[in-house]
Length: 122
Image (cartoon, rainbow, N blue to C red; front, side, top):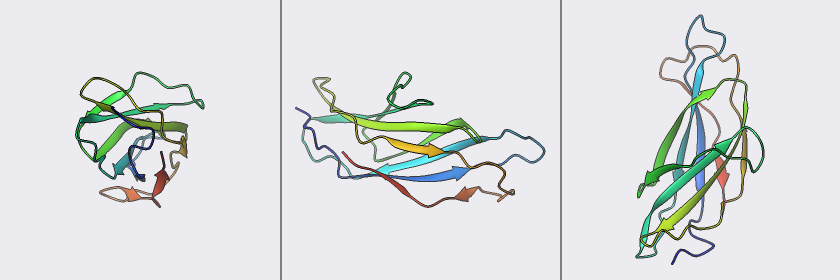
């Protein structure tokens, strides 16, 4: 059974892919978190949307401890949360919500720009 405090933390670092000559470039968010130690853990889900507490269909990232959320729009504020689920499909409560505004107008950094990490806590 998945418990309320499943994962110690989710570390989020912003990775911006700036496309030369395009005003609105796609951006991404790199996510990483401490592994849950419960033996029946099956995986994690990432939720996000453009309003607090209003998320689209979750992304099932499986039983991994890192994921890159892509296709975000530059200059838009996103609200993100994560959950964990077990082999019986029980899902944890949401992590604390992260509010993140994608970076607008950064110069081309080749492989992208890494922002300061942001932390989500269960």
